[in-house]
Image (cartoon, rainbow, N blue to C red):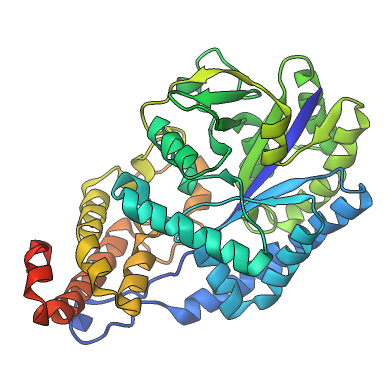
Length: 409
């Protein structure tokens, strides 16, 4: 018996304005509301609304045998509420079927775990709160930003009470093992690890419309013929991908919607196939073995490491400068300062500074408003300079707090 576990990432960042050096100290309006609104409206119409309706129809028509999961960043949920509230309603209808699971992540889709465990925990708690408020739902499984994972992430998440965590099934960490089983993260006691089957996931997310691909065109029958043989040699096929695969990365004209409408029916033709959410997968199968992943892996690019966000000096210096302000920002207790600081943590800002180019990274640059990585870096550092001026002014009457933060000088 083999089950298919669909997980979709839903995220849109708050995009910054192309902030010039002349604005430093004079203009602290960093966020491009017009651009954020227009992109959210566009993606809602092309992806979120039609895809949610398709998924709802499939769940109902299969009598809930078709089951899926989502992780929706807090940044995306905030913008849905601001610009496209009907999208929140459509996700709510999906959750109400009982065939949809919601996962937790960092609220601002940040790399906080790499720089501050305190901030990481705060953002996960924030995300848990908004999911409860909007959907009356408490997640039991966690996925870190961009599937950034190692043993330490698993230890922290187990300590926070989650029973499952998602990661990339990278060849260098699996070796001869298969991603189609559950594993126990090294040193943990209860939490289970679900690994992405990157080949089958990327066949849909990246290669679906690639005419030079030897398997093009991909049909639901062909894809199912790759799923069926896993019976007897695996428990779960974890298909993890960006939700924008439907309608944005793969346009409707490619046939992606027709493919997805047929896929559940084809998979369910086999009597030993089923669909399960991550929690159901965790509850249904024992772990195959303990898996040791001491070094960080992610699901980005062919290397599946941190180089997409922290691979050059611009990215590293930006992240280090941003997180160096943590104590002063949190101590301020100023809502606007804290919110701006957290919006700046969103991993997309670091990705826009990426200077390496790989085909399977194109989707990450899909909504990039900058022409060059260096333009992104300049805008980010200009904003950060202005932010530090604001923060310094706020703490001017609090010398004790200021003295602990020489980065404000």
